[in-house]
Image 1 (cartoon, rainbow, N blue to C red):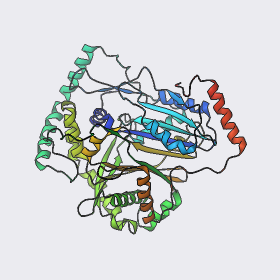
Image 2: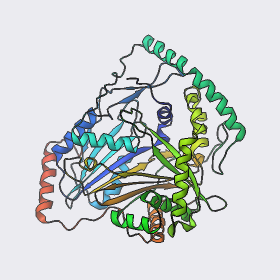
Image 3: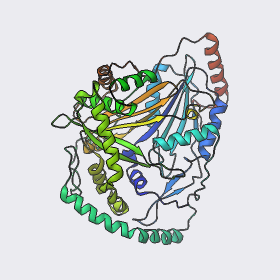
Image 4: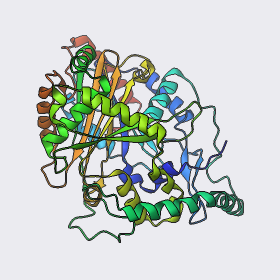
Length: 474
């Protein structure tokens, strides 16, 4: 098995901070089976997420996948917190320092609630996987399946062996590098800026920005809807679940001013390219469509047709930007950022990602069904400079678990007020445009009996008796 990183994964590795993390969240309205969660954690350590990235000793060499010697631990918070603090705790978890090279590359934690039940969080570097790959890994871990692939141990190659092997790999890459140089020159001549904060490939380093290295928290919001209501509304508008999400994304972008001069919105829809046995971390491509958000709330047929045509076109006409990927190992960091900005970023682009029905095993981390499950993106700790260079961000990620549809939203605009409250208000207005009834934030459970709360507290006390501090790594 070749353990050399795919060029797309190498970009994510070189831009790990900007690439962000994925965060899975499970909410239980009853006590979590700690033994079951520990089993889930052990299987994660032995599954397809049990790998890290090792740099080449050559400055231009390709990194490789390796098996870590110290897998990530499990954090059990011994002191319960109110549910009102759950979002704050999730933000704390999203800020967990992750490192795809040195570890930890992911982090699993559980927080008991004072009124019964618990929340579970898994944050993982985007360098390790995309949403589809993550769901596959979670389903495997919950079902007790281990990864059949055994990567070389970290540091197992002697320096001269690594130099020799990586030099040979570079030689094999030379034809692709030559083609990439030609493609880059052609793309630079066209200068296909899209009105955002992008710059041509031959632009120099960006101008200084006040507070450029200031780390900022990007606003997030999550909402839940009844799956039947979601499907019924999509059908009544002449659309599908996918186009309803796209229409909602377009209307939300319109409300926050993330539009072109003529009022259009550029929707980027990730398309899954993962195949059986695929070892890539990010096996996706983007299909872009430009839409008018105005009619979306009353008729999705035009957007549905545009999406279908874009998908057909993506199969027939390869994306010429992919030809640039072989250049990645040879470029300085600032120029790699320019390439990514040129290829993917615009102040009017919005990501609309729907990965469909979630494998039921995914929402059983302790062996039983969680009451709520969400995957959300996070760029926690990203700098102001990154957001200004890319024109900000807006991304909607949706999936279906049991009879619920969940949608998580990540949004930031450099030229406006950015807060969770503001995003929720904009989201509520956009949902109203579609006559959709949603629960924004975490649904409150039915009142629990004193016995259930007591059981939860007894369980927490039992955990605390095993610990010497407020949390542990196991």
